[in-house]
Length: 407
Image (cartoon, rainbow, N blue to C red):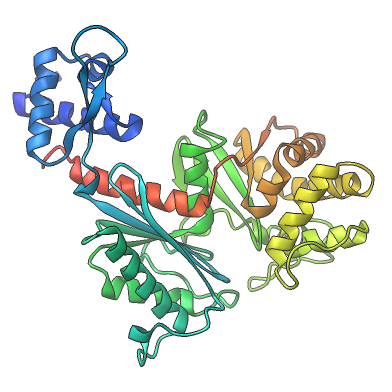
């Protein structure tokens, strides 16, 4: 026979406190009446917990509402921004972008460091590290000083390659620069906060769910189309990383049209060879489209080509988009056949540049080769999806700690 346990007053209190804190994190500043409406708590209960959360340094009055109606204005309550700060880094082969945010999610500082930075920062002299590592450390410290951030609660680093879920390390890869791993080690050795590692595409997938095209669903796949090809797999609201962190490495999918099959160390003859930025530019040349973007910058060039083709969407440009969609659909068909996600998001530089026009074409071609109904959407996250997903992940960690029911 089961025993029904009644929550103690303390348990009920901390549960209600956390519910209000999470509502303020999700919706932003709210009035006490709105909090009563959302929680179902009484006026005295809400007043009591807001006072308690204020004394604990988590909530404060941030303004007033109701100036346009008779009667006294209602106080508006919000999280105290400076209670915690987090950071995220988007690490690519060509450089690093970083951002800092407060507890409300407001970005308080950001910076971009291209790999061709001309000199090593002065305070990195003699460190023996790659110049890019010292440049990132120095810039992060400078941005913290400028924004008045004394401590960081959590730092999330998003990088290409396999983030080992068991060890938290970036697995060695012949295709990635050694300074990526060196940067992770340096950050963990010098910062006063835990540094979490996540695959860049996984972070983009998180951002798409919370801020972008799939906020209304819990099962989907984000297909990343950029310098490389990858996927973020989210099933029933949970990000799936796989046993070794390799879930979503769809660049290695064997597909027709590449002249062979990929190897364990080279994905050029896999799906990567049909949908990555270099393949997009090669396809554009075959269709007689003029080159776009800076010489040697494959990603920017592919993005510009696709964006221009969508704007034209006729003649050679239409033929290019049709064939590109067909190539993307080959890899997408393999993904949907195994996972049946129901929703596929085209992200990365190429996916975002293609927008709804490319998504529509991919959906048509996918429907012709797959019996599974799959809705294809274009990414709608603004700014860097990787950086946005990194800040969201860091904020989730900080809030879970600060909002803990046993605090």
